[in-house]
Image 1: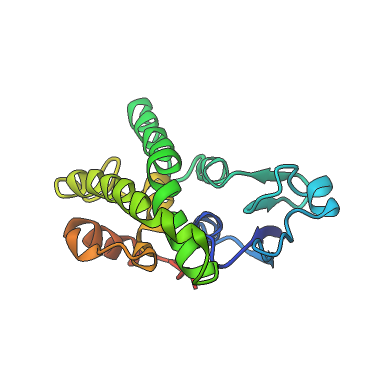
Image 2: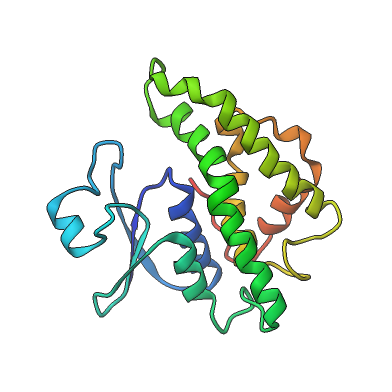
Length: 200
C-alpha cells in the first residue's frame, strides 16, 4: 500500500492525500510533528527524505518521492487531472510554480505562525508582510477565477488541487476571504468532486 509521510496541519501534505483520494487509491499515513523535529531524525533523513520535510509518498517497492507538486505531477499522469494539450500542461506547471513561489510562502506561513507557534513568538512580526504578499497572490487567483471556473481548462487539474490546499484554509492565517467571492465559489466546486476529502 502507498504510504504518505504526513502532517495533518500541512497543506502540502493534504495535496497528496487529496489527489490519492480523488483517484480512489488506497493509502495509509504516518504522522510527524514537524515542530518537534520528527522529520529531522537520522532515520528519516537516511531512509525517507534527505531534505527532512513532508510530504513524502512512499511506494510499495520502497521508493520515496518528495515535494508535493512533484507527487501531484507523478500521480496525475494519464488521468483527467493533467491535460493532454501541451499548452494546457505548461499552464498547469505555471500555476504550480506560482503556488510554490508566490502563494505558499505567504499564505501557508501566516497559517503556520498563527496556528502552530506560541502566541508570543517573535515571528508574529512577519504577519503584515505575509498578508501584503499573500493578498497579492490571492487577488491574482481571484481575477483569473472571476472569468474561469478552474485555473486551467474547463475542469479540475492538479493546478487547482495545489492551490486549493492552502487557499481554503487561508482564513486560519487571518486572511479576509470575504474579499474573494470567485475563489470561494471555486473552492465549492472542488469540494463537490467525487471522493473529495477534507483537510482535517
